[in-house]
Length: 253
Image (cartoon, helix red, strand yellow):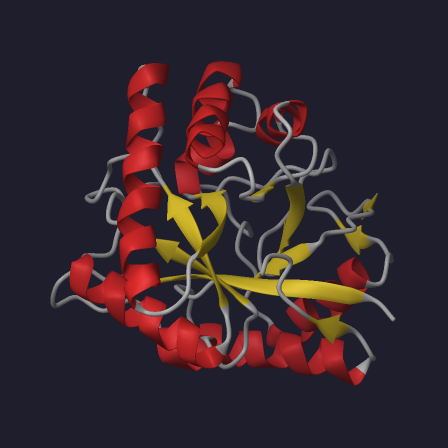
C-alpha cells in the first residue's frame, strides 16, 4: 500500500487578523507546518495551534522564514548566513516551547516562502538553515524540494530529508515551482488537484506548466491553508487518496 503524509501551513494569522481555518485543516492533514512568528503567527496563535495539533494527533513542524511580517515571508532577504542560522534557531526554539506545553514537540523543520525557494539554489543560505537544524537537533527531519541545495546539504550533514510536492502549485519542467507572480502558478480546481495528488502519491506523472510529463514521488504533499476554498480542497485531496487505498501518516513522530 502506498503511504504519504499530508501537510499544511498553519498558524499564519497575526493578532486580530485571522488567516485560514487551522482547526478544520487539522482534521484533514497529518503534519502541521506552524508559523514561528517571523512571517506570521504570534504567541497566542502558536500556543493554540500546538494545542489543537496535539489533540488531533497531528505532527508539529517548525515553519521557519525570513523576518518579513509585512511581506508574509515571500520576499527574498539577503541576510548574512550566520545571522540566518540564529534566526532559524530562534524560531524553532519559540515553537518548541509552545509544543512542549501542549504535550507534543517540534518533530521536523520546513522553510517557508521565499526562504524555501531561495535555498533551492542559494548554497550559503541553505548551509545556514542546515547548520541551525544540526545545532538544535540532528534528529529533526527537514522537509523541502527534491533536488534542492537544501536537501543535498542536509543529507550530507546526516539529517533525514523528506521530499515534498505541492498539491495546488504549478511546476516547471525541471521540477521547480512556477513563481506566484506568473499566471496559473496556483491551481484552484479541487477535483483536478485531487487527481494530481493521487498521481503523485502512486508514482504516476503529472503535467507541468508547459504540458510535458513530470514524475514526482513525494513523501509529503502540501495542501495550502491560505488559498480560497483551502479546506474543501484539502478534504477533496484526502478523500481521493484514501478512496484509492493510499494510507495517510505523518513522516515524523
